[in-house]
Amino acid sequence: MHKNQDLYLYLKENTRNLTEEWYQNIDKTKTAGVYASNEPDVIKTLKEQNHDFHLHFIELFKKGEEEFFQDFEPWIIEIASDIEHINTPIHYVIREFKNVRNQYFDYVRKFAEVHPEITRKEVDDWYDVILKEMDEVILRFVEATYKYSQTVLKAQQETINELSAPVISLSNQQGLLPLIGDIDTSRAKMILENTLKQCSQRGIHHLFVDLSGVAMIDTMVAHKIFQLLDALKLIGVKTTLSGIRPEIAQTAVQLGLSFNETEVRTNLAQALEEK
Image (cartoon, rainbow, N blue to C red):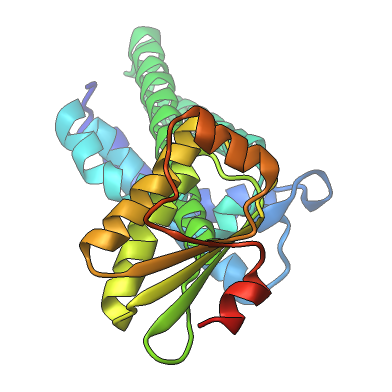
C-alpha cells in the first residue's frame, strides 16, 4: 500500500466535501433506486453511507492492505444488505463507485498542484493504488451482494416449501397434509422433514395425506413420499392416503412400493368421512 501522511490528512479534511460534491453531481433523471430518491431520510442515510465510505477508503494511504480491507469489510457487507441498495439496479451502484473513484483522481491532482515538490511518478502511483483498491472494493461488494441475495433466496424458498406443505390440525389428534403442485426432490425432502416435525410438535396420531393436487411425481419423489409414510409409522402416526392419480399409482407399482400398511381412499372427502 502506498502511504502518504500529507495526502491522507488532505483527504480526511475533505471527506464531507467529497460526499456533498458526489451527491450534487448525481443526475437523478439518469439513475434509479436509492440515487433517485427524494425522501429526506433516504438522502440523509445515503450521504452518511457515502461519508463512511470515504473514512474507510482514505485509510489506504495509511494502513497496510490486509488491515485496510479487514476494517472496510463491515461497511461493504452493510451496503450489500441495505434494502435501498438492494432495490437499486447493481449497474447504477457500480457506476457510483466509479464516479467516486474519479473524485479521488481529481483530489489527488488538486493536492499535487499545491505541492510542486510532488513528482509525476508519485501521482501515478497514487492513481494506480486508488484504481486497484477501488476495483477490489467493487468486487467485494458484488460478492457480498450475491451472498446476501442467495441467503435471502434460500430463506424464501424454505418458507415457500414450508407453506406448500402445511399440516392442518383436525380434531381428535388428527391432521391433514394437502399436497398441491409439482413436487421435485428438494421439495419432497422438505415435506418429509416438516411433516415429521409438525406431527411431533402437535401430537398428531393420524395424518391424512391428500395427493389429488399432484399431477405427476418422478421415481425419486415417490420414494420420498413412501419414506415419509414409513417415518410417520416409526413415530406412531397412522396415515391415510387419498387422491392418488393413476399415473402416481403406476409409478409406485413399477417401483415395487406397497400400500399394504397404509389406508388408501379414492378422495379426501371419503377419507375424512371415515375418520
